[in-house]
Length: 542
Image 1 (cartoon, rainbow, N blue to C red):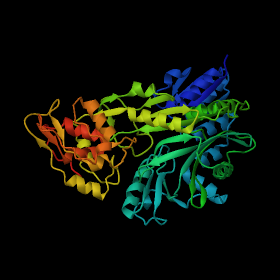
Image 2: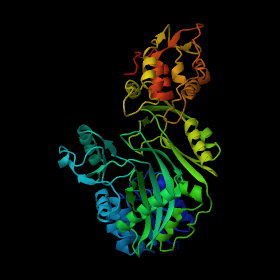
Image 3: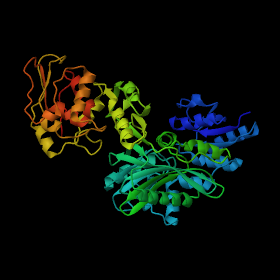
Image 4: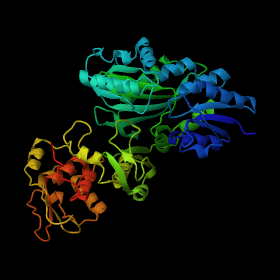
């Protein structure tokens, strides 16, 4: 009979663990709160159990242990390392102490451990609903987050008392225990690190640059493995991370498990964001580190969980792997194009799509509400980054022109969040405001009847949208998706006078069209064109 292992979670992030465990000859018992989780079918045995229910997971483990044996229990990329530790400790399986797992799961306990150890970590205080109307306990800027959630849910920066109260209520709403943590804002680039912990030894499995955008939220639009920072900076970051792992009690002489950290390089040096008692989600431990190094940390974590010493942790190659997300403005998805073309690009390894036609999309406020992700791998950094970013730009998401949420988004240009696709400076805003309005003559425009008032300063601006598209590239996307023969505007000739033709001019797209493009990129411009004749023309900058 094959040795059995329990894996918590049947989501995409647990797919590598299920696959590798089976390759190691293990019988996989996979637990998840949803029978619709994407990797349920990969399991040898599936059990639908709420992963917060540590007693329920313990009961499953005891049943397996008493009916043929159980070698171990593990997770990767979930919030439930404390459930793993509880079960392992109660059943005498390899793992980390339950109290240490709680230290790494509850951000208030975590910060207290770092403070006690004298490690660089921001000042903090934990709050509940009772404190929402109180004065902020620390000076602005501050960061609010739930004490016990992941993926950036309920996490944001605040700079005013009004923002503080709104963000605190949101963070508490996302907390399973009804608590949030208020901490001083840390400035500087951010990094992710994975490690295998085995009987007091910490083996680093990757240090990646995280690419964070769209304040006041912290939206990771991708990461690049390995980091491009200097070796001395890397060592300083890793030294701080290792000290944090010890401070949480994760690296005792008998501890077996993993650790995942988010570290910032502030002007005063490395500071610990968070350390979890598991391998990372976000495609790092299961994809980008294996692609870049040839090492599978998930395999090592499984070996440790079943009582075997992890091996094969020495990097085999010096490649780069890049992960990049693609996103959308608010609306309802009408079509998605470019998926096959993106997958076929050189050096692209994986494409993960989180949306479907007919589904709702919104501008992301956390790291679980993006439209999808691209992963590439190449012998050099430039090729890996270029492959992932070009593939992300290949994917075009067309929105339903009847959804008022898209129109509302387009009507609110110039807001801090959600940001404009092309943020116009004062000079461009003034030039846009001076353009003539859209003029519609006759019926809804079709074919070659559309003309566009030139906006040469915008075309020559060098601005890029959320995915790095130029203004000309977004116009080309509009042509492709609409099938309309829009006039060509070339950035290299943008400063020359480019007047619309008088031939068949039934509709002249003016400032409202360019405003929609600036606000919502190709999606906004296409939404505007497809709605001509069906709604009032009022999409303007503020």
